[in-house]
Image 1 (cartoon, rainbow, N blue to C red):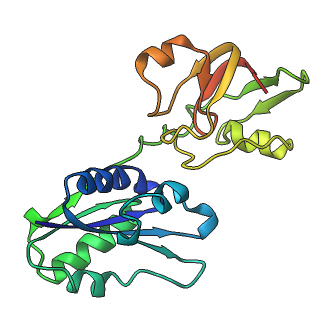
Image 2: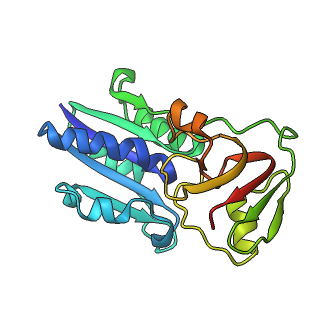
Length: 210
């Protein structure tokens, strides 16, 4: 069998893991990764350094290199299996195009990814204190810690912004963390000493090791 992998945005996370597995197994596959711009391309170095880098095609909207879904699907061999992950609209576009071209359902595989967003109104405001300076910042409902820190001139490296990749992990010296990530194990969450500020929140005040 051959495999055609489509990733939209942060949907690259599970699709890239699948590509690495397929490469180890010596399987035939091609990966198409759609992203808004080169700067917002997650895992750039990991992809560039992979043994299968030549099988990865990156399509950047900003550079005018949009993916031609129909043409890509039409070129696939009859035994090809399609795997897609990304925003709902992206998944629908790929699977709808495949069905119109006569792809059977058993060859279409959708990888669902990312935690469901919390219901609006559940977010409570809380504070973060910067240990090195004593500066205290309020994180209002609907805004993340990383956004508030960035507004204050404190930059933390981020990538997925969904608590999946672990890029933004920050140590917490004091305070109760409300974990909303998919990165830490239950044991790590229970330790209450680090969190992903891109999505997780606090109850009361969190003292950050910054």
